[in-house]
Image 1 (cartoon, helix red, strand yellow):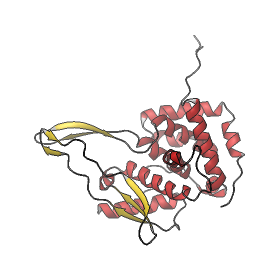
Image 2 (spheres, one colour; image 1 turned 60 degrees about the vertical axis):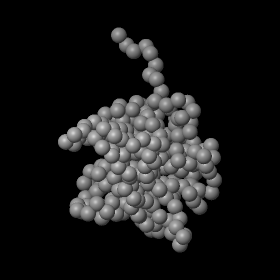
Image 3 (cartoon, rainbow, N blue to C red; image 1 turned 90 degrees about the horizontal axis):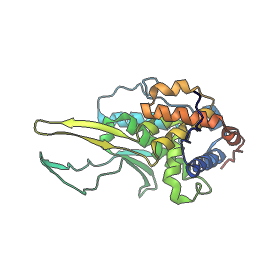
Image 4 (cartoon, rainbow, N blue to C red; image 1 turned 180 degrees about the vertical axis):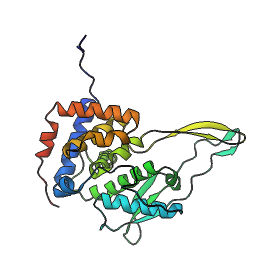
Length: 260
């Protein structure tokens, strides 16, 4: 029997509208040849990240240099610094501290010498996907801070627009895969599990943004699918199908680039 029920949209009307407006904002001020000719879908493999370095800090610096290059921001001055370690919340096998503030995954700021400084949490070195997602998010902050007008809905939406901006720069697979992380841990006297995530958007929102990028760039989705977590792959397929049945991509391709 054929399916008589209409598929549920990947996003609500409000959320999909915000994504489209963000892409229009990004294409208007940061599109043009930089996007259509230079931006590429960065993949989590050794073709894009071939460096083999023993030191954790050197590894972070190497990854940051790669991300900055793929984002087209190689000539933009900024420095990368490591944050202090997060506090150890387990003070004994059965005692865990609560309500202790952890360091953010990454930050961006101007120091006293008016230099742009991006910092990263040292735990990111053990999670390359989240590290790339964090670096691309902070570099998206750097880029979009130069926009002559705020993102859709105002600067209060900047973090959400920044996540979409990281996908716009080519790092959508990393953004989507880093939303939810599940890890197990064990020691002589304890074992358990923990979850963690990064970014400001949901898996569905990241997948939708990635689908827009793929279709705007005329990239075969088959290139992305093998590198996506199972849930992301399913959401991405649905988003691509939904977008292909609309005029959204044609509308976005008609956005005129304004040089700033």
